[in-house]
Length: 214
Image (cartoon, rainbow, N blue to C red; front, side, top):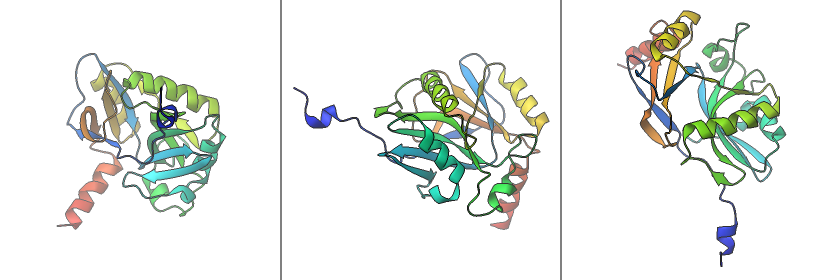
């Protein structure tokens, strides 16, 4: 007979996010999907016991800063979930502008969460599921919400080099390549690979900050 604990769905609290490894160019060959890399802050969005919490990658609670995201999470027709994504503020062309997030108001109603992974849904831990299954469930969940504060970060199939070139032309920060069939693993992982646009503001900003720290 199952114990009471075994009958109770296990809902995830904050966990360390999966971090992409850095490379100079995207991987070649089949077996990868690609996402546009947004210039924002990493954010975990949790719904649990009727409450909403938004965590930074270091576990800080920033729920009060992003009311549109919290409202969108509250509107989801689920008992519990844990989403991984990037919080960003976009311009009229849909391009994420980091300065609008970094130097905008502390409580920023324009900030949206672009969700790209689903770690838990209604008590089921999805981290061991292949990424394509997690993304399929995520797409259904986010599209059903219909709320401006929560958007789906769509993935793309194709040639990584061509997708990266197109992202650079649009002025995006870069792309993240993710291996099909991969699990969600906390910490730095080579199943996720980021390639940054050398002309993007984020790259220039990082170089300036590194120089200033010397």
